[in-house]
Length: 62
Image (tube, rainbow, N blue to C red; front, side, top):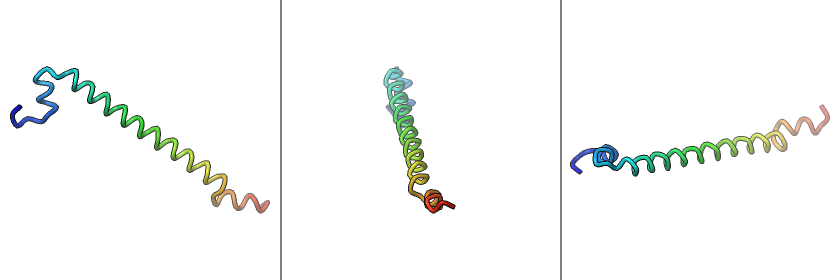
């Protein structure tokens, strides 16, 4: 490999299988992070509704 970018060199040398594996691995990691952020957001929303500012005014009966 000369001064080429590593992924271009892999594709040129017939490393399509490895390149595919790396791209799928990266896509799975991104999906895991997005799902984790979604679960965190839903959990924070639930906590905010149960114990946050919105819940305090409802407990007074107003």
